[in-house]
Each structure stands twice: as structure tokens, then as C-alpha cells.
Amino acid sequence: MKNILILGGGGYVGCNLVRKLLKQNHNIIVYDLLLYKEDVFEDLKTNKNLKIIKGDIRNLDLLETCLENIDIIIHLACISNDPSYELNPNLGKDINYDCFPKLINKIKNFNIEQFIYASSSSVYGVKKESLVTEDLKAEPLTDYSLFKLKCEEILLNESSKFNRTIIRPATVCGYSERQRLDVIVNILTNHAYFNKKIIIHGGSQLRPNIHIDDMADSYLHVIENSTNANNEIFNVGDENHSVNKLAEMVNKSCPEAELIKEEVFDQRSYKISSEKIYKKLGFKTKKTIQNAIDDLVDAFSQKKLINTFNDDNFYNIKIIKNKLKSLIND
Image (cartoon, rainbow, N blue to C red; front, side):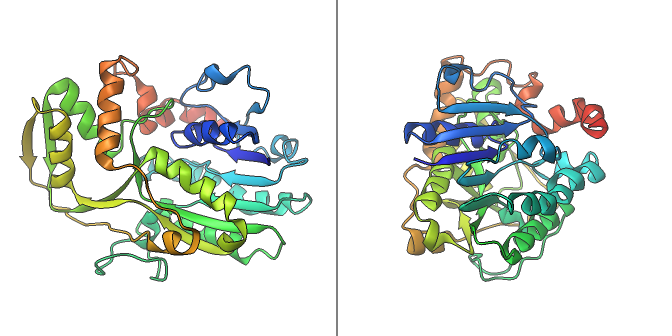
């Protein structure tokens, strides 16, 4: 049993990960602003192994109060994806990068065993190689990706004794207690189920995806294999499907939906290899993208997700835009 601090633990992946770690009887502190869903852990409020601290990653004095007796830190906190970041690049840099070296400096005063940082597979930019592996040069195309890479460099160059691992996730998809409907598989499924339309922009471009359960499981694997994962960078994905293929999979689960193709100028492809984490840590995905689509359809049909086009909480960019003023003032 470990004492684990999850920064950004109330997010799309984080709330799934928290539940898995609690099932393993770990003690969990979630440190999160809870911008997207205040009651994301309502079903766990009687769990004595879970503590929720509502706080900003930039508030190091508050964050420091959480560090005593912590064994493992999992850093998921950020303004995620390019559109949300670009709403206010100064704020994005402040949250995603500027406070990171200060955090690393702060934890030196504590007996942290392991630090896991969630980066992004977007740090590679666009590559000609058929599969993008961790040894290829990172060439980020946006500030969001650039500052993810800079945080990686700070962590890997840190001289402290704690083990450190960097995860570069593919795009996550599927159902979560803190649902996102602004990532490609979830977008397509939402429109197919409710609007009976699957609009494909381009189609031939490749996109790496991973089921949300597998994404959470990858962190469990890194924790369980801390020594082998030390000072390593791992791509974590499952299937590199074309947008056309993803649309076909959605259509399989929503056969009444009409496929509509629209041409786009930008047909850049992104594809990653996750062979390294399998060879080094034995991690292998258990679920498929089709499973993620089916899980979403089930959630829609059971009315676990309602008002999916008008509820801003499903869309990161809308929430950040609505709360931009308070975030800047903080």
C-alpha cells in the first residue's frame, strides 16, 4: 500500500485512475481545481482512503501541505490540448510549465519515491516514419507540446534520488465519470448516437487512440515496475487507425448514423509505437477502441450522459473560456 498524490486527479483520466488505485487499497490524495465537475467523487465520499484537496497547481504553499508521507506523485494537471491552451497562452505557460520547476524543487524536501509525469505524444510533431518510437527526436509544433517537452527535460535532468517516468499518451477515449466529448472517438460517437450523423473531416489521416481503462492501467503498471521504469519515457497507445476506420467502427455501434465526408486541407497523420512499454514493463492493452465506442453508446442509452451538446462540462475549451478570468486572477 502506497500513499499517492495525484495532481489533476479529478480529470478525465484521473478520476478513472483514482478508482483503480483505491481498489488496490492505496491511500490517495487528489489535488485538483475541479473545474469540470465538482462532485466527480461523490460516490466515494465515504471512502477513508481518499482525500480531496481543491487547489491550484500554482499554489505551492497549499500543495506543500499534501506532501508529507507521500510515496508517489502522479502529475496529470495541465490545461490540456492546443485549443484550450491557446485561449490564453500566458496562462497556459504559467500552469503547464512555469510552476513545474518550482514543484520539483519543492518536493526535494520530502521522501518521494517516484514521480510520474503525463506528457503528450504530440511532442513528436509530424514524422515520416511508419511508427513513432521514443528514440525519435521530439519536434513539437505548438507551445502546448513544447512546454510538455520542457517539463520532461526538467524531470529527467533532476538530480534527486526519486524514480521518475514520463508517459506520452495517445488520445484517450471512452466513458469516464468526468466525461470529455471533445476528443475524436467521443466526438464521432456523440454525433452518431444523437444526431445520426458521422461527419468525417478528411479521413485518411491516422490518429493513435487508447481506451481510458487501459490508459489508467498503464500508470498502475509503472507504479508496480518503478525500478524498470526509472528514467524512462514511454509511449502509451493502442491502435493507430485512420479517421475513416474510426468512423466505420462508430457506425458499427450506431448503424442508423449516416456517414458524411468533408474535405480538409490538413491531413497530417500521427502514429505511435507502444512496443517499448510492453517489452520493458510487460504492459499490454486489454480493451479496444470498439469497446470504448460501445461503452459510450451504453452510457448514452442509460442516460448517464445527457445534454451532451449543450453542457459545457463535457468540453474543456468551453470550461476554460468560462473560467478564464478567475484562473488569471488566481
